[in-house]
Image (cartoon, rainbow, N blue to C red; front, side, top):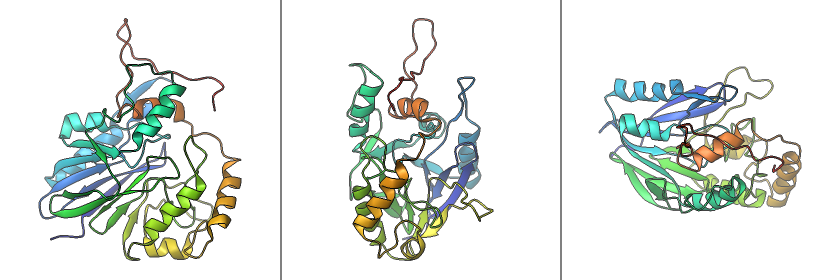
Length: 289
C-alpha cells in the first residue's frame, strides 16, 4: 500500500495561498485541498482562474477527485469548492467544529434563521482521529484548533496538510486573535503535530516571504519545525509561546478579504441567496472588528 502520495502545490500570489492536488499514484484518486476562488473586491466579481489550474492538473494526471478538503473556514480567500465539485465531483469536507464558527459568524452577519449552523452545507464533517482513504492511501484527520476552533490537519500517507496552524519555520505560527482563537490551544495542537515522525512531509496553506528569503516555499517537515520554527521549537515552553503569540496578535490588522470570505466560506463556498432582482449581495458589518 502506497504511503507517499503525489503532491502538487499551486500558489496564488493575490492571497499568498497554496492549494493542493494530492494523488494516490496507484489508483489516481485525488484530493483537492484549500482551493481558491479568485475575487476582485473592488468590482465585486469572481473568476475561476486559480481553481482551473487544479482541474488541469487532475485531468493531466488522469485522476478522479474523491475529496475536496478545507483545513478550516478561511478568512483570507474564498473557497472554490462548489465549482470544483460541479466540474470534477468529490465530497466537500471540513472539520466538524465548523459549526462553532458558523454560530459565531452567523450572529456577526445576522444571517437569519435560514442559515444552518450545524455544518450541513458541507458533504462530510471530519472528526478528530477519523480515518479515511484516498484511493489506497491511508489518511487521518487531526483536530488542531487555536487559529480557529475548527482547524484540522490531514495526514495523507506521509504528507501532512496543516492549513494555517504552522508556516515555514522562518515565519512561525498562526495568529490566534480571531473569534474563538486561543494561543494556548494552538500550542497544544502544534505539539500533537510534533508527535508525528520527524520525516513527515508538511504542507502549508500560506507563505508570506519573510525578509531575507527570495523564493516562496510551502513544504517542510515535522523535524524541521521542531528544530527551527522561530515561534515554537520542541523545547519552547507553553507560557513563553502564549506570551509571544498574544503580544504579536495585538498589532495585526484584519485580513484584507475577511469580511467577504467568511460569509461565503461559512456556506461551504456558496454566495448568499439572490435577492428579488436576481443579484447576490455580501454584507459588510460596520465597526464590528
